[in-house]
Length: 411
Image (cartoon, rainbow, N blue to C red; front, side):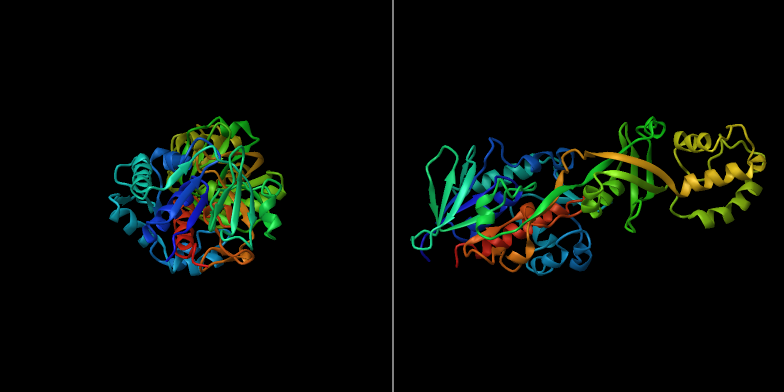
């Protein structure tokens, strides 16, 4: 096959992985990665608190697909080509073994994201892939009559003529910033943030910052979707895996609501309001002479339990048997259905992700190639695909990049 010149736009996870996969298939091709900033692999470096949550231990593709609020149908064909087991194997083949934590997240055994960065840089060096930082692409033109189909215009640099392009520029696309993409006929689904935490108006609960509950159910009021898992109270509001996952599922709706509304929390998910009322009869009998402030039968953090007692107007020295019916009802409601007003959001550390991007109906899921422009491929978050927290967004990056690499330059 003739030697081809390929450019990957974007120096992040998907961009590097795509370029490396192309080089593995075609080591004699001329490959470049263009990155507009002076930093490469920045999200890889900070992901998972600097440990890099590479993927999730989820070999069942049907279960894996349920972790993507947007794009699951599109990804089905993709994951049957390259999924978590392939990711694990590729890294192992390249000297990076992964370990699984109890929640299923997978990290390098070193627990250091630099292991992943070093692996990629070593492969780039090995295959002589050019990494060009401070190369901001401002236009891409299709040259149907030329021998090389694309001309890439770079801010303040000479034009680059190439045979094929893979776009892997990450999230938060703005259609006005990528006019050349819309000029090709592509539609951009307006991006909005995903994976964030909730800013809470009530300062009484945020005064409990640092309190964590291992298992709770959280819901956006007016939406049927719930998430179950750990919650953390912070100085600005509610965080933790369950809250962050909920933000992904409700990302579009929350944006439409301007991040104002309310969340509902069941702090003891083994009960609902009805079943807890029934259980309360037993609690009063078993704990009758105990003081409510000292005896917490739900294994909640003591500071949180005291908060609920105060909200119900219950003095800590009140005996269980002496609890007034009105206070009992308020307490039961607080435990099973706390309603907290939300005003705004806070980005969750490095896990910032967007929903939105290039409309999926315009991309071939089998090749990651544009259905509108031959030779133009996509990888990673710039497509309208996003996953919940836990390594799923990286898995989509690896999968889409691998598939794009198998087909780029062949049309």
